[in-house]
Image 1 (cartoon, rainbow, N blue to C red):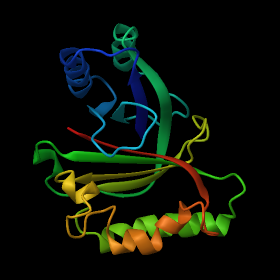
Image 2 (cartoon, one colour; image 1 turned 120 degrees about the vertical axis):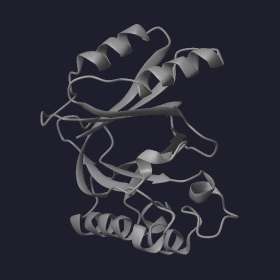
Image 3 (cartoon, one colour; image 1 turned 120 degrees about the horizontal axis):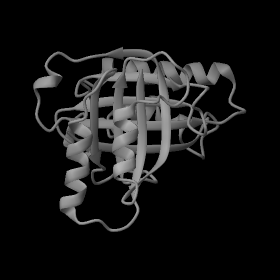
Image 4 (spheres, rainbow, N blue to C red; image 1 turned 90 degrees about the vertical axis):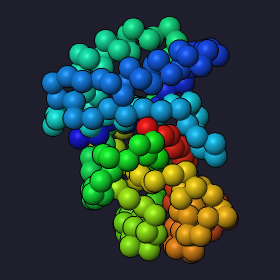
Length: 213
């Protein structure tokens, strides 16, 4: 399972403290922890928090996992870092790109969505299908996963669409050919679900953030 958290600084911390916290999260190890990645959000992110922390865990329990190493780290940093969003994800589909583990400074993108409660199931399935077809049309996407937020941990968000990229230009640069956000497939097949002026819109809120790790 994957557990993604949005965090913000309690005050303007010095750069060296921010770097220390990110280093601590990325170095976290312990029983049941398969991976731990965190980073400050890059330019162009659209999110109510400052950092994202992603954990891949060996656990099947619903709701917020209780991992002693995670709890200890958050307690140690509680005067400087606040958890403002927490979502346990249930993967629907995914692909792990060969060689991602060997790439330094890999870009991790996390898109959290809130589908409107009134959205018809047919439209929700159409959104999910459009997202899942993106890697077939946008080759700069490396690893990816589409998940729903576990009902036991659901407070606001309903879905999470995660990807990795070799560099930020592949994700956000409008002048980079076939970058994710500017790609014709994105514009013609996905944007409508988010556009408040489009009758197909069913996503009423989202957080778009990426970090380098």
